[in-house]
Amino acid sequence: MSAPKNSIYVGDLAEQVNETKLMEIFSSVGPITSLRICRDHSTQRSLGYAYINYNSPEHAEAALKALNFHYIDGRPCRVMYINRDPWLRKSGKGNIFVKNLPPNTDSVGLRDLFKEFGEILSVKVASKDGKWLNYGFVHFKEEKSATAAIEKMDGAEIEGQAIKVATYQPKKERSGSITTNLYVKDFPKEYGDKELEELFKKYGEISSLKIARDAETKASKGFGYVDFKKPEDAKKALELDGTELQGKKLYVRE
Image 1 (tube, rainbow, N blue to C red):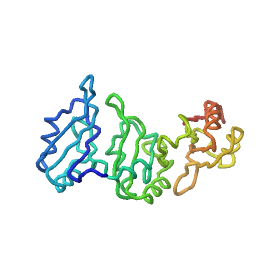
Image 2 (image 1 turned 45 degrees about the vertical axis):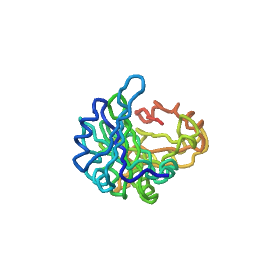
Image 3 (image 1 turned 180 degrees about the vertical axis):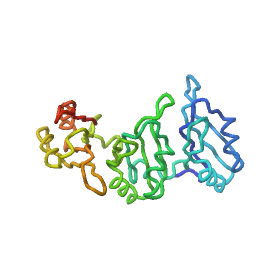
Image 4 (image 1 turned 90 degrees about the horizontal axis):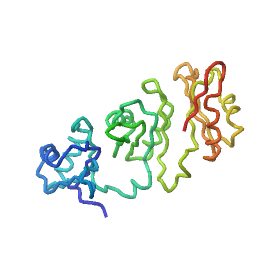
């Protein structure tokens, strides 16, 4: 059963943000009946998210529209309805995983990269100790938006580095701590699919391979992806990292 539409979730909060500050910001769109920042039972430190209930669904909707990605103490907060569709969220439908993001990319930056593909339900960039990590998640309302985003953005160069975009896999469906997909760069630009496949096929069956190319000239950009059928084969192929090819060291990473 879904929560009432007058209830919202607020995430990605800095540890020092307290109830008084949240009340001041979120009451600007309408009367609040309750507000709770979730805290560690032992230390009482903020866990970085809160739940807010409004008098009416209209005020909750106003908060979603006006305050999603609003910066609070230097961090953009995420605002969503509570448990809007638990099955949709857990199934991974319309959800994509993005990695190799440029340094300091926050949730606003990630949203801006993908908003052209359709309505976004939620965006999250992982963080640790107050610092943004280089990966995140984008959850689209429609599956076709996620598919279009993967097709266009996988391998796209953002601020000098190629991002990896793939369908999100729930934990129970993942085969292990290593993925089957490897990011490869610094191979000779004259290499085509055949040459790259020749380099990696000795480690196991390859399910797909992609070299990033210039949209106009179709010339290789010198990086790409190799996706193996089995995670253990991808793990073995990591030994190619550092191999010298025409005076350059090959870079191979998960």
